[in-house]
Amino acid sequence: MPAADIRPVPLDQRTQTPFDLFIIFAGANIVATTLQVGASLATGIPLWAALTIIGLGALLGSVLVAALAPIGPRLGVPSIIAVRAALGIRGGTVVAVILYLTNFAWIAINNVIAASVAAHIWGGVATTTWWILVLGVWSTAIVAGGPHAVKVADRVAVPLLLVVGSVITWGVWATPQPPVATTIGQAIPWPRGLDIVIGYQVSWILMFADYSRYTRSERGSFVAVILGLATTSWWLMPLGLAAARVAGSTDPGVMLSAVRIGWLGATLMVLATLTTNFVNIYLSGLAWRSVFPKTHQQSAIWSIGIIGTALGVAGGGFLDRYVDFMLVLGAMLVPVGGILLAHFFVARRRVVVADLYDAGGPYGRTWGFSIPGLIAWVSGSVAYAIGGPFGGGTVPALVTAVTVYLAGLRVMSRRRA
Image 1 (spheres, rainbow, N blue to C red):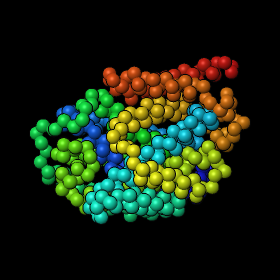
Image 2 (image 1 turned 120 degrees about the vertical axis):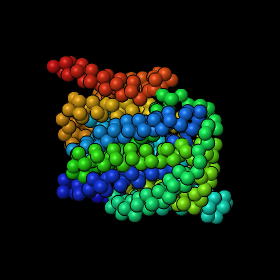
Image 3 (image 1 turned 60 degrees about the vertical axis):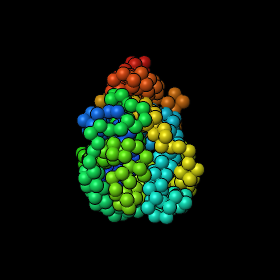
Image 4 (image 1 turned 45 degrees about the vertical axis):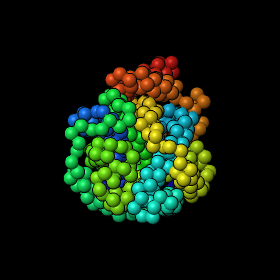
């Protein structure tokens, strides 16, 4: 199928193997921002506590995303269409807009980090803008070639990432850790640290079906996604934590210099930026075409890639607010994950694929919003905000969203009866 196609994938075209799905998610998560999450925990949190937060948070966030992956093989539709079953067609549009806007920030962040590191090794600071442009155009061109082009690129890039990453791991391992880490910035409470790690993993939640819809096996999709996300996070987040402790800074360039990995670090940043921006551009293309389906696929892909690249060139201090960005994403997306789990796996509501595209059908009623879904989404986000400063917001948000949504479904069913 072409790039950014929002139509259902026919059964005979679901030929992607679970291994290819694993490579896509692993390639997307092997990126500088994953290192950055680990680095953000080097803020007065003891080493053992930070590692515990990474281990538990990466697992919980990955499970939430992976639990939804079987919806792809089941329905054959992209995530932004599948969410209409629980939130309504207009509710799905709201999710699409959130995805579309936040992915510009992701594209810019990835390009800026990679370009800064690459310019430090190859060409000097004056070439930073050129590196941003090259990385942005290169990754956009590959996505414009469709899922097959992305798969081929990932099959080359991900193994290279693993080799280079292994060398970097050795460099960090061989660098002695300070007995007491230098305090970097404002200390983060432990529960908030858990929210940051989970929020980062959950930031992938809106691609739960986008690639798994090309795979036939529901179980294989679940295993591929959880392994792709969890294993790479368990690997890279501790590396970021260790590098930040050695450097006394969360700046990517300073961190890589402190562990003496030079051009290998730059290579990792460049390759990782390409593989993760494949996903970011593709997701934004699907989101845009779910709102404006008549938009030409290539126009959607190229406009997204160019805007994201331009934001990176313009700058704007994206990394300065990175932790806050993770928490905002968690507040918005964790409740959505809970609602989808409740709809598809607890309530087990039957979904007719054709209805997901029909504005006059069951998902277009009540102005296109699912009332139970909308109330559960808002309630879950509020619970996240209230619970965050105390014991963490993830669990309260999930429990609230699931409970409120199921209760809403019961009330709606009684009224119709």
